[in-house]
Amino acid sequence: MRILAIDSSGLVASAAVMDDDTLLGEYTINFKKTHSQTLLPMIDSLMNMLGIGPETIDAIAVSKGPGSFTGLRIGSATAKGIGLALNKPLVEVPTVDALACNLYDTKGLVVPMMDARRSQVYTGIYCFEEHRLQVVRQQMAVSVDTLADLLNEEGKPVILLGDGVPVYLEQMKQLLRVDFSTAPAHLNRQRAGAVAWLGRQYLAEGKTVPSYAHRPEYLRKPQAEREKEASGIAVDQIEKSSDRLQPSDYGKNDSYE
Image 1 (cartoon, rainbow, N blue to C red):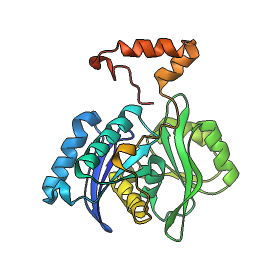
Image 2 (image 1 turned 60 degrees about the horizontal axis):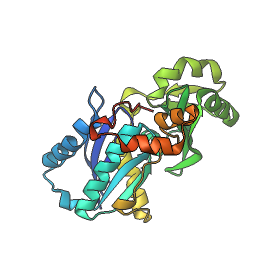
Image 3 (image 1 turned 45 degrees about the vertical axis):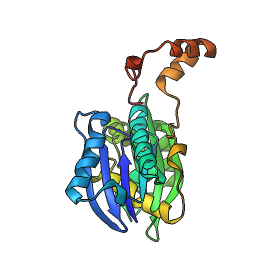
Image 4 (image 1 turned 90 degrees about the vertical axis):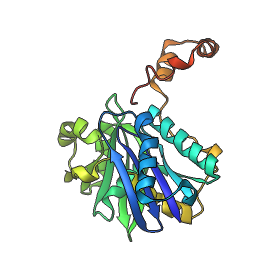
């Protein structure tokens, strides 16, 4: 089975093609480009380099969230568009689970930390048993203090990875009472290859959705929605306001949250 994998859940944009248990190619970039600029050209370039056509793809694995609201929407729209055009199913892969797979068969606990702003992280707690990813605590949005408390309760060595690590490393040093280390540069960010690897397992288990049915999993409400709720603006007022928006207005104030 040949899988096209997409991850645009954070600052990294990544695409990969996996054929059965062989990663044929992976294109990853993390440098000052928006996903709307990079994702489709990356997929096109990757397929051209491999000499394969879109019609050879059996399924599309996509990082379903949590992560950047804008990034997830772009990745989801790209995956759905390709899936609808090719009449192929989508495989939804939790972002944090896939990130943990970068450290395959690591001993101890694997703990991704994606910066969710406001002193929070998107995270989960994982380990590997019998060469398979095991979810100790499923992906969640929590404060750094809460994450440290959970890890101290587990009482096991920890490896941290993700873009939240450099942001909160000094804080974690103060809070953690267990041994911990951080993943090296080539393993500490999202990779479509990991999405493809986990997606292949899901595909074998029949865990797919029709392209039209895919929805990102945000875990938190968008910042704009939270601010509207906090200000007490009535829902009907918000809807009326949104009806007056022009296409050029969308995305102007969307944050990485």
